Length: 172
Image (cartoon, rainbow, N blue to C red; front, side, top):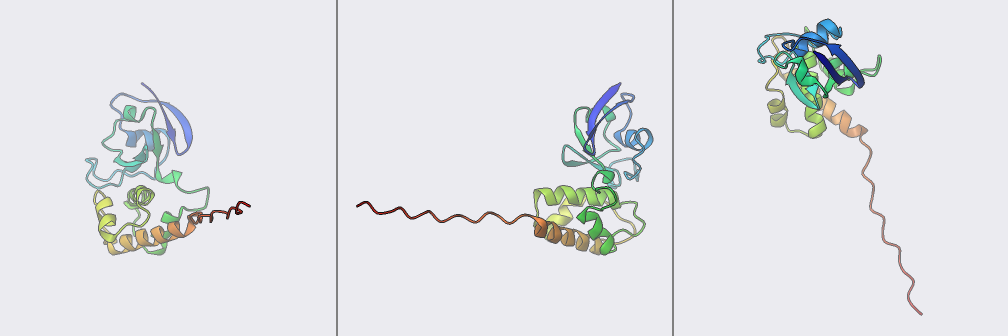
């Protein structure tokens, strides 16, 4: 089956079986190994990718379901050797330990902060509840999301200030 989709900003076309998982196509056929298989059952979030901007478990998604869609993997966030601010925050806060779950957490965070640039701790925990970490505990991950949110918010252009209406000359 021929599948075409946009992957990390570029068009790809690949031949895959109707029962091929997106996870396997990404890792084995397209050699993007940042997306990990943890449980294979959609419970751990290690395989999270963004499909049309929404986090999904690529272990549960058949590759043909991505046809015509926009897919972003962890490799799609960095710009060359320059990490995305979310990636930097995870490193700085020590939220990476073994790193196996990190790509899923980062992509879930990316999706959250695009939709809600100033989330509360409760909103962060809700957005990340589909991702499991067995190493760091969640306090460092929560701190990394807070740091990333603050940095991304600081990078946003200031809102334009309203211009005062010009005074009109009085009629003579």
